[in-house]
Image (cartoon, rainbow, N blue to C red):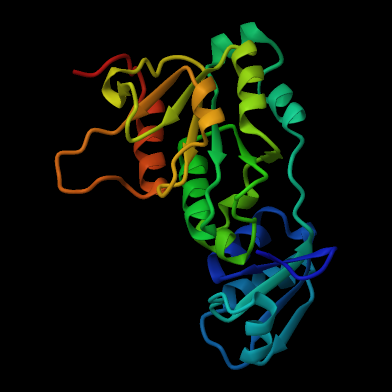
Length: 257
């Protein structure tokens, strides 16, 4: 998905376009298909059933629309992406402290993920594991664009994403709401095996190059690390997020040996 002007976003790729046609076709203004391209029958049928206009265009036109992102012969135009208000998101997930404690929701906070493909892959894992909402910083953060949505296989359009200026500010509020805030860090004070995952959790992930910003680190309840026995200093941010979310959502998890 990429912003082409002040009011339109472009969704590129077959999976991403199929996803939004199946889930929210009313938001689509138009589907553009590459002339003489094969394998687009299902998308044509979905668009036709939903009453979404279809336009057949040359390959170069699709390339210009997506800014060079691989489009697989199909793009869709939709209304501009808007971030969810984080206060509304938190209220919709859990109304009060007792609900947070009883339902133990999981949130994901992203602190400066600059690669859109990493951003998209992380969101895909968040949706797969059932994260209730994502909060991202507004500084040094990848946009919701064509590469991001394609990397998420369209799931970025399925989960509320809020944007705030400083994650450290919202982390303090999350603690007041009953969440335990765990920051992913190579030099963390706790191994992921020694963390209690059976509680309301806000997992904070930074970029693999820089990690979390210092003001974010300072307000986390724990900084957790992923033990590695091989000859590598760190993992890709999306891989690390997937591993930690797998633990956070393991049924009946307490503390593994």
